[in-house]
Length: 237
Image (cartoon, rainbow, N blue to C red; front, side):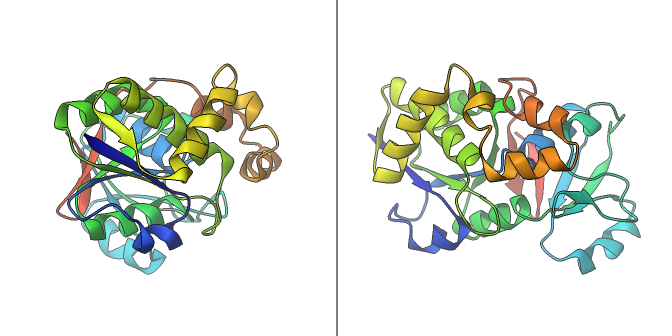
């Protein structure tokens, strides 16, 4: 039977107990992985995750659309920030994005060092769960958190996904972090947004006027796509 492990911060990822060869799901509910799913749903053809802002100009010269955020705010000179609701209002058909965020792209780039990486959010929960079940591989759920500390919203998403995988009958829980995530999800599932009202990043984004993004991030299956990392960029499976 395949296993599920949850890693609550990118700094803990090198210490995971799952043997190599697993599939990693990178998670940043507020807001990077939610925004990535939204951008693909709006027609983007590829998204290149970058850690260093200094890399962006080279991609811009090659025709990429710049999408960048630090501390929750869109960077000057970027066409897009890190807002899923903004992406869904744009015509991104066929466009390539060079994308850098405070936490989410850090987690994605950490994950790809270990092999196959998919992107997870509430907005693609069902499609992602079905894909993982069909592929029958060990799974590591990697939370981006906030500046390498754990976050409530990422943790409950991991619980929601882990619960779906266990219910399929093809997966078992490997570690206490996953058990913790599932138990938190069982408390949160009737109202994930309300459950996370006290989360620090929820409050941080509310202070920036991002309430619409926050509410969207907790909605299920709004962007049923499965982004996968392949040869330096995210594309749709």
